[in-house]
Length: 414
Image (cartoon, rainbow, N blue to C red; front, side):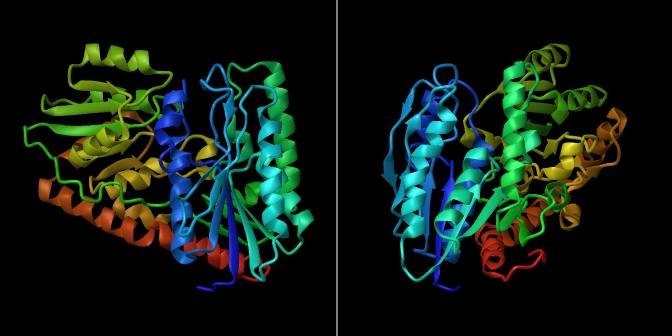
């Protein structure tokens, strides 16, 4: 790989060694999926370009006092990359001034890097389409027109902030922010998208790469904990959100006859009370609540099948790739899910797809898969794991980003 690159990753990951502190101070949900993906991208960039990647970071956390215990985030250095001299920029974490504080705390670090003369091709890669980060990309370009700006779009701006139950002021703020983001996007040089369909939605006319996610081997060294108790376990881990299909899954499972079936559910969300009521109706349903990540991984490894009940019935599915898909596949446990528009066809032979959106169809697919011999299920799951770890690991996925940055101006996709 060309050693003349100077890459600055502008992100919001949780630095190594700080995860516990961030979780302790958070009084509401944290952005785990975003954090995992950013760590994967940084690791992959560093593997392709060791010693050429630096990080300027700004924590993506809830505001004080409702969602985070501290009103101020301190600036500190950390080391995430090879020979890393990375920095976490502090800011005032108070609602109303937080966004401005984050921006201005990052400006000096972006300026110093952009104006630093080292004879290398500079690339500024920002994670997520927030107005704070798109403005910083444009600021770097004004300071040094030679900087290649690249935005990683994990979610389309219009789907990033739910307006349900929010005030009119909040909705107006989101609308204004989204307009600013889409205006900024017109002036960015490169894009990393999670799905091909994002390109048309964002009207992108510059080079882009599709990186739907990164398969991280969280199961490396974990022994097979499958318990042979005669039961067949279907496991769901994730948000207990109506639109993600958790209640559809419960309704389908309740139709499924057989005392040796178990549906285990882990997570938190708006339907928690309904899930608990389902446990009372059907003692085969087991709700474990919000667990530590290592405990969730052990359950994924030991289940008979893993399931994602999100249906392909909403527009946003074209613009998202469920992060749990790769984690599920990496466990070597077979996966049942719907064929979503955002999932490329290369995944098809490694997943069990539900035919349509009816409860009977989901029930029938669960029954069909669980009736297969254990050896067949093990082989299917292992093939999925081997494929995703070979084709979608951090080094392979990040190379797509590097190649796209180094390519001349064209619309061709990596």
